[in-house]
Length: 50
Image (cartoon, rainbow, N blue to C red):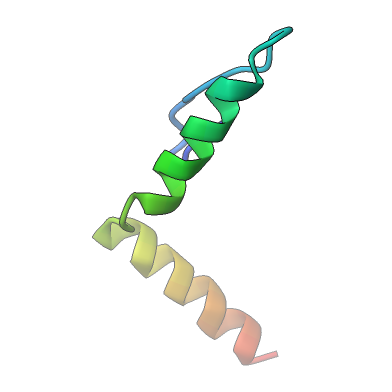
């Protein structure tokens, strides 16, 4: 599993499903950084102009 900032949180291995669930919940709870929010808004505005 890769975070929005490209940091690896977990990798799939046999019997490692529990690691993926905590990593997913942690990433969902992590607030956007200012840089991530700016990138998201730029992409959103570009797609809205099409």
